[in-house]
Amino acid sequence: MATLHHYEIVVIGAGVGGICAALAAGRLRRRVLLIDCGKEAGGTGVHTSVSLVCKFRGTDGTVINNGIHRELFPQAYAVGRGLFGEEDDVPTYDEQELKAAYQKLLEREPYVTVWTDSEATEVFTEQRVNASGEKSRRILGVEVVKGKQLRIRVTGDQFLDATADGNLSAMAGADFQLGREQDGKMQTATVTFKMSGFRTSLLQNPNVRTWKGIHALRRELTGYYEQMKALGQTNNPRPSVLCFPYPDGQSLLFNSTAVTDVDPTNQESVDRGMAEGVRQAAELIEAVKRHPAFADATVDFIAPKLGIREGRRVVGEYMLTADDCLTARTFDDMVAACAYSLDIHDPLGGASKLTPIQEPGYYHIPYRSLIAKGWDNLLLSSRCISGSHEAHSSYRIMSGVSAIGEAAGTAAALALWLRKEDVREVSAARIRYVLQTAGQFVEGNVEKVTLG
Ligand SMILES: Cc1cc2nc3c(=O)[nH]c(=O)nc-3n(C[C@H](O)[C@H](O)[C@H](O)COP(=O)(O)OP(=O)(O)OC[C@H]3O[C@@H](n4cnc5c(N)ncnc54)[C@H](O)[C@@H]3O)c2cc1C
Image (tube, rainbow, N blue to C red; front, side, top):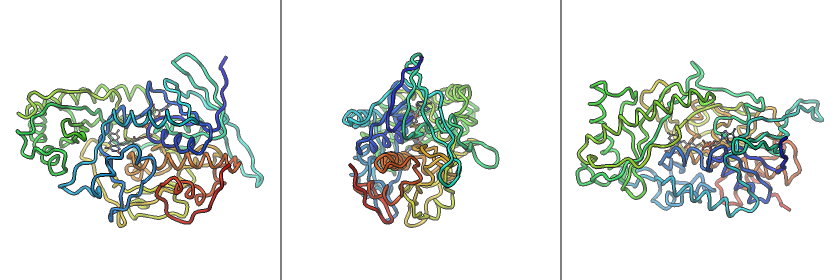
């Protein structure tokens, strides 16, 4: 018999999207439960290790994410204008520092309860007919399995899907899309790894902290990798080596394996992908160690979790398109913004393709893309928001997802403050008012809200 708990806001998934949502809602004094099936909170940004703090400024340097993201990556805001010039330092982070920042912020928040090692396995819903005779659906609760054994029933007023792959929405029965339009294929997955102890004096450009230095290093290492490929010693389909410096310049994070055909909705496929990624990582380490500067380098870790770039994209009240992103489209119901290029890691394993956003270098993310279509209390709070395969390749980065999470958490808290059962009745102008009060970047008119 399951025990019963009630929280005002239930967030499933404690990656950057879920954590930012929980913090935003908790800071607005609503009781939040944040659940993750992993042993620790942090999601992809901690357990896959991804390294780069991607662009969060428009072309003129305007910061377009000044919210919780800034608390997570303060050093990236401190460096110049962050415009990725060749002489600039590469804005990266250390995943252990990010984990510590998450812990500190969550522990400091009395309205947020965190359950790890807890998996949402079932969703209870109801169908309703509103005053205008329209049908809509609601989540009543979720079944959570804690520590693989204890079954707990959690009811809530608002539910946030921060699972990255839209797992909560799919269990509830919401519509979703998977993969690109022509063949359903998704971006490649990657096992990352960290190496230290290389001798910078043996590199063409020893200052690997700068873009110029890291580009030179990648070219040098690609030479050794190409030799390995020519000898048929690796099946890794990536054409070149991709690595980033840790902030101290003493270690490197390699984001350079490429596993095709991983379907995150199928555990067997994920397990197979992990095994292939680890195999490719071992081959790549061998290639890197052929460079004299890396002869005595050590492998600090191979990431424990397969890095999955793409999963379900839940169908929302609006589906963001590639054209919306590339033409820097603005929306009346914007609640977040993203400045990162479209960045598609070729599903067939080739090079990744980066297409920048037109002037002013960022686009709006509309509130409707965060609302699962036809659902009253299901907000999307991770990379599973409503958008095309191409649009997703841009906003999936941590700056985009943190802004999405912060907006979704704010919207859920406002729905409670305003006593709205349907999140569609919370106006974007009010969400923007609260986000702006907290320091977040917003554009468009705002409508004042008094809480409490
Ligand atoms: C290899 C790789 C490299 C990348 N490089 C960069 C980079 O350099 N810079 C950048 O900004 N971004 C990068 N990204 C993208 C970015 O890291 C992710 O898109 C982003 O972190 C996703 O955040 P999220 O909150 O949507 O999901 P996640 O961080 O994946 O969190 C989802 C959480 O939901 C939990 N969960 C799922 N289902 C359930 C369930 N049923 N019950 C309970 N919990 C559940 C999972 O355990 C997980 O912790 C990279 C991604 C990859 C894979």
